[in-house]
Image 1 (spheres, rainbow, N blue to C red):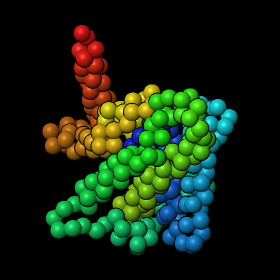
Image 2: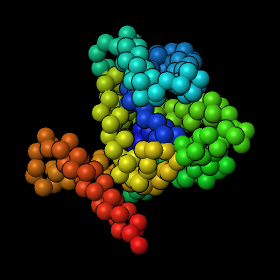
Image 3: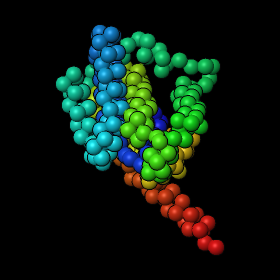
Length: 263
């Protein structure tokens, strides 16, 4: 969820929402457990091609002025369709090197904590670079960026490329952790990633992102199931609890903003 949330964060930073990011992660998972396992070179080419198509969505959205929510929703059906064509039922196997990549640890430190910290650090670095400033600029005031000579199509491609890399990493991690793949394994992460981004302090209007906040939001939503289990509460209440937490945080944020705006 952390990786999918980071991918969604870059899209939201451009004042858009990707409704196909979870399905794309599921497709990458299928590709890695089928083609990448059986024919590594063909699998690698398929992953690169999928990433190129995903990045191309940004260009299509900018060039044709089509709402991102429509394009990405349509793309999600394509990702799922390709996944079912390659693997009608859950299965496949994780390449040994992929399992090892996500299975190492340092001392008593869990792999998940190390990787979450690494992801947060990478995103912070990207956000602090001039590239990150420009990407946020297009989300905040695209007209001003265009007048300054920046190409909206070029940076839309870059934004979706970065998001695709993180979503692809999420798909690879799903295969490594589950040692198999399922095209539907990432579907639930799509809306959860939007919730995590909002919980983390990012603005759905674009221009304002919070890498650490988004990662923290994703971790919080991921731990709700474990918390409910500790309290002996049925996991059936996971979604409801996540929704209540999101509404509560948004309400508190709105109240805080209102107080600050008052003289």
